[in-house]
Image (cartoon, rainbow, N blue to C red; front, side, top):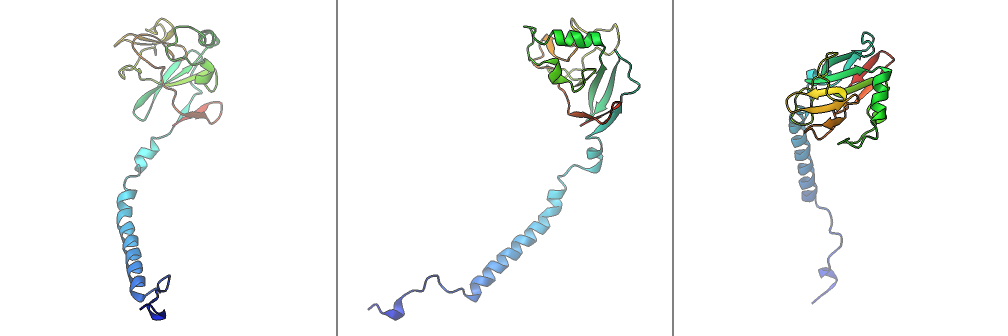
Length: 183
C-alpha cells in the first residue's frame, strides 16, 4: 500500500506555527536578558572602589635611605629608596642558601633604587617593622615581624622565621622619574 502519496517530504515544510514558536522563544530570551541586565551590571565595582584601585605616589620628597608607607586597597605599601649599600647587600644575597622563597633582587624591582612591596607579613598578616632608622629591621637590615619573628632582607625576601613567602610586590609602573602608579 505504499504509493507516491504516502511518501514524506524531507525536510518537512515550515509551518506558520513553527515560526511563531521560534519568534516567541526569541522574544522571551531578549526580554529575560533585558530584565537581568541591571542585576548583572550591579555586580561591577562601584566608582569609589575603582577610584582606590590605583594610586599615584610622588617620590620626589623621599630621600635616599628613607622608607615611606602609603595605603593601597587598605593595605600598607612600603616604598624604600635604597642606598647603593642596600642595593649591594640585596644583590650579594641573590644566591644565599637560606632563601626560603628564592628570587633575585632584580626580579623584585623595576628600578634598583626603589623597592615597592606590600607591607603584610606572609605568615599571618601582621605588619613588619622596619620603618624607623635604627628601629628593628631584623638580622638582614630589611623588615622584622615582631609578632612571630620573621626576618626579611633589604629586598623583602624572607630569610628567617615562620613566614613562607617573600613580601609581595604589587603591580606598579613608573610614570616618570618622580611618580609611580600602584595598582
